[in-house]
Image 1 (cartoon, rainbow, N blue to C red):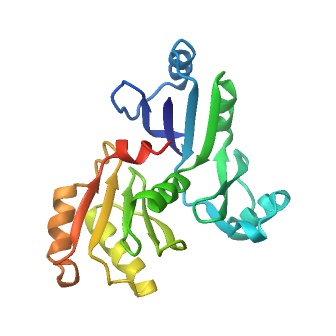
Image 2 (cartoon, rainbow, N blue to C red):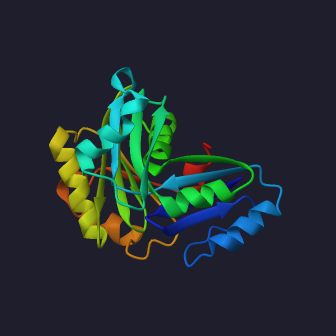
Length: 230
């Protein structure tokens, strides 16, 4: 199995089974050759982008996917295509944009390829492994995600940009305040490899210095755990 996470045309995280996680710079042509010469049967391509829209499965019509996207983000970029996936974890569909270069890379791979938005992976992990009402933060080199659920319903999925740990704390506080969700015992945090602008130690110290978080447990989740559900 191989895993690729792209932000725009930039590969920000990838893994092959049995090989260490590596990040950019990266030569997609060499990746293609490495995969074709291996025994890898399935590749996963995830798009890390704030340009996505969630809709309940009950009101989602695949033929209208482009209209849903344009409603929130305007016309597609000239080098962008619309994709959609059905998420059975919370019965929601997701519409998102993908750069044509990444789509062409997908088409160049000879084995089975699954393409999805990165937040769908987050939702699956949230459903399976995160307790109801516990905040789930995922830090990538470009974006931070916040996810929260009750027993069987998705309460919140938000995405933001950040420069450092303080931005992530402000983002977390804003999300919790917007839905009045402070009655929890643990915060679960997953950071992808090599996020240069994020230090878990600095984040934990800063968060614990805030009175409302002083008694909360901070649970670290490795990227390998996130990918293990595939």
